[in-house]
Image 1 (cartoon, rainbow, N blue to C red):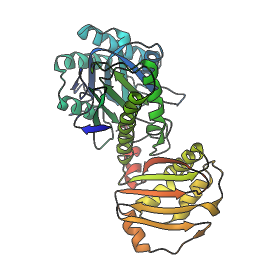
Image 2 (cartoon, rainbow, N blue to C red):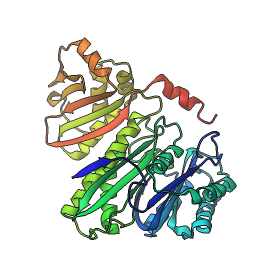
Image 3 (cartoon, one colour):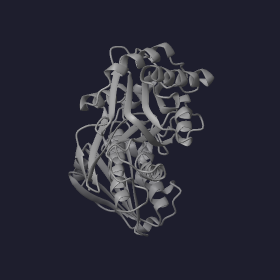
Image 4 (cartoon, rainbow, N blue to C red):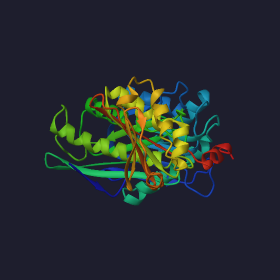
Length: 408
């Protein structure tokens, strides 16, 4: 069991954060954040599936693959450092070098991340100055973590952070995190940066296993616009300062940690989906009774990924044929005569399709359900016992407006 608490990346013991307005692209707001652990951490992570990977993704991927102890993360918003060649990779190195100079952390112990416009070179001098400005400001307050979650935002309308606590053999353990993401979001990682910190003591192998599994059913199940980013980065840092007996094998302690980890990942993923560019609603597809988990995942992703489905949710149009259509081209094989389809929200549940034929339903009730800020399409396949959830948002006029002038 775990308890949700206030905080984010500074909630766990030994983690500090700071921010600065480096002027990388934005004016009048913070655009750099740094998170530092008092002691080196083991790190696990997953990264974009896009063949075109940002320089920072390549840098961090190398750190994780080489099992380097990580003590700091530096993040900038405004410029993505993607499609920037060797100059972009050098910007990562010089950022890490700046951290080494002011904090004494080895260069290969510094993770870096960027988000923003693709194809622009980072102003390295501003990055280095930003690091030097943040170093003396580092502190462990809840406010410092919150400010870090704000500094990494681009088109996000809200900052995204969460923290939980739980016990491992009588020791209190804390897990907190922050993420950003609003557009260029699609399953198999998305335009998201997410960083989780924990004072748990756990083996690298089990942390890696837990991270990969948790991401699969959380961040990899969200979509806003069908575009998989060049910069997706999700990292978890564990410094062991909770002083619990190290978790080195699966069992009750591992399960306790995993439950908390999945809750944090799923919660952040849902917040991210609901804050999709221009969005007014969180749009969830819940598929149950599928033949296999793979089929359930395909079906739910297809429903929330359909532009026509997303537009129907925006317009509060109970046009259930759009959702069935999306299911039909998902790649999952099923018999439509087995399917039951429902709309649901806090205003109730309404069945609209059953065993191959539409059902007469109350249009006013459907409208009431679809007007809510969180709307779910429930598909019961009646062919097995597998289930899955995917998270998205409605497609609005503002999505086009935001992305038509993104560089300005």
